[in-house]
Image (cartoon, rainbow, N blue to C red; front, top):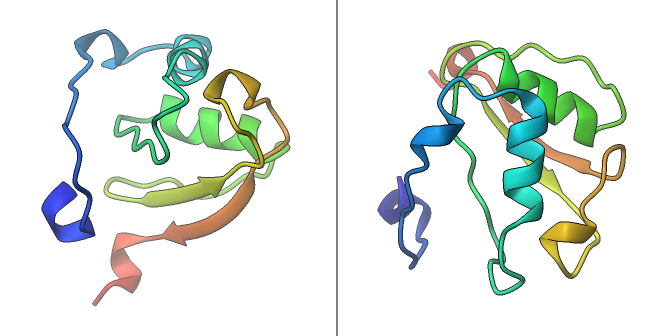
Length: 98
């Protein structure tokens, strides 16, 4: 995925996030270094939709398998990213990619 997106970074796999609760994912995001400009969190339902919903002020959206949600924040540090402060950049549904 990183090559296709043009990212030049290491991929870090966090097994502890597999089937994690939304609070655990939020804490993981907040703990990221300020040097990280872009963070991709890939996971399963229901946490992916629940975390996105928290960042987007409760916005309810369809989150099927292989969905991609892009959220932008006005924060210099990941620890400053808070609920209800994200802006939806993309909501790509697999059925629309054909």
